[in-house]
Length: 337
Image (tube, rainbow, N blue to C red; front, side):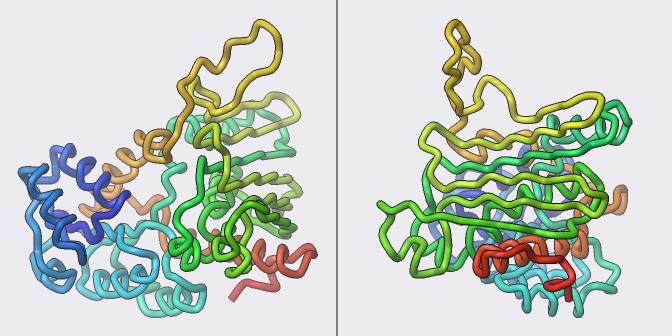
């Protein structure tokens, strides 16, 4: 396969290494607005070749495209790739704004070209096992799902300004995980947030954003989703999930790298060292995600996260943003379009 990769920042460079390790990827065509980023990847990866622009890449006879560029470019690049008839993987979110995401849906929703949106927890082995446990019925009636994402440190203020806020940028992974694991849709959202008083004003306050947030989801069958997020978890990168049922409970992410310190005397778990970066904690998930995309691109598999599915998660983030702003519960009908 000949795969194109647009964007070679933090996650794009990681994807380049992952794709280079997939036997079915014979050639990797890469581009980035920074020539130094392209040079770094092509020098490190023998099967990688750089091109000057996304336009040149889309005319290079590709079997699939992976979009890892900045969020503001997602909609434009996704539309261009699909309109070239190329199966496309795009990191979340679909677009920089909800209005842009709707335009993407309107233009390519019936194009017949496979699209996969990047939500890596759907491919994390522990999250997959938790979902399978729920589907098997061994948990009984599931009443509560807890999902957590805690970053060890905030990204730069410039990134936060264009991120869409903590609910669209961070909590969105938890919203998707709860939807995917339970197989249910969200009916109502109630969210709150707070700001680290030591943070500079331009980090959060100037953007109407929060440094920490919690969201209560009521699913359409009554299951409760409890979401916890923060940008300032100094002990490490914390991603985990709990599923509690009437007969049993399971958890994902409770490994030796869990960034928590037990206070019970004599308890040495987790032994550490704590996870400190999302690409450390979710490395296996990212690899599996891209391997499956290659199957999607060849027609051997259906997209595990198609456009419409990812858009439903976006609506939950929109409801949470509105809820925190107006300090009230928000029914999903208020935001769905």
